[in-house]
Image 1 (cartoon, rainbow, N blue to C red):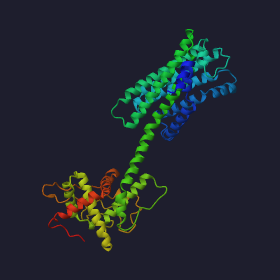
Image 2 (spheres, rainbow, N blue to C red):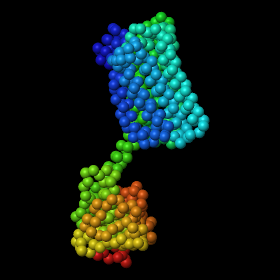
Image 3 (tube, helix red, strand yellow):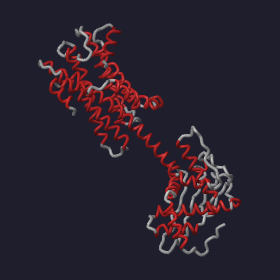
Image 4 (cartoon, rainbow, N blue to C red):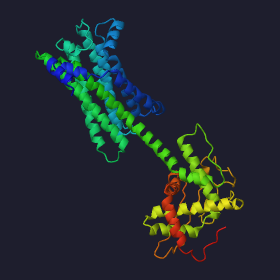
Length: 479
């Protein structure tokens, strides 16, 4: 801690110290507004979902609390209405409504968004009725109280002993404390569940921290008010400790709602872009088959770009099927195993060797590159399994460069067929490259081959050892 700050603490007391830590109300307001904007499309689209309605109401009310609790806005409210300190019951009402939304959110979470049982509806009506009654009582007590002098920052402690205003201050603090205690306890019980993903768990932990900080706000306020009742002066707890605690609580609550949504979204975007980048080596290799490429589309989404690259690669591999040397691939697999690679890596390295060899063969004799045409029955290709026969189109230089995903979705083939069941001496059958209509499975094998292409030294080592191995008798001659 800087020496000047320490000196100020000892010379002027805790009020100045905590005043230096004061966080502007506009910071949590901005964070809460961002959370509301992020959640708003889902709230509008699924308006019947009581959980989303509670989340939207909670964020909106939290924003309003921090806007109307700013001293300058308090003065403006009093001036516009023409009643001294009328902003007090208004802010207290917003805080109480915020508490009700917290409890409604927990009820919706605990019972599930699809639960519309009579018990759940009764409990939600009970929460609304109780907190609506609290708001009504707050305004009645303010009407009965005598508070002529405007107080912008210390109204709670200044009027702590004033009849009716004393009860109003105590009522809103008790209502807020009860809601925060219940919410904190239920969230802590839920966060221990094992079925939560990392983003939802993190969001719940942030919400729990926000509730705990709200309890710090309540404790500071109540302590300062009780001190006034006993003739002591701890106003600095109310004016300098409670506001920063409330501001930090609001930021944590906003993060709690933002994190599950934005975290999952960013994770999905990162996964798609990583897969797209990992496919680049195999994409660059297959581009040399007929010197074509995936058309660039400025507005294409990352998912569409990944699908197009994936489709392009698989269409190019289909055009290479008659040039693939299955015996070379089998020997390369055995060679990779002999070099100490595990089975999955050996399969990818062997495929990389075979694809490079097929590309070279195709470029030496491009006129022989004839692929299968659209058919209605099973398709059988050299070195490939059978497919549904509804996905791969006719061969052309750019025929599938702009594929939209149909070539890799509805029209799936079994991909690389298994090798000779006998395999090499002492080897099991060669692992099969499989292609599925599921995009995740579809991407798996070609991504492994593409990653293998990033290690040319390993590929050359496998190629050299495979070349030294004798070709299997009876292997089909390459064209």
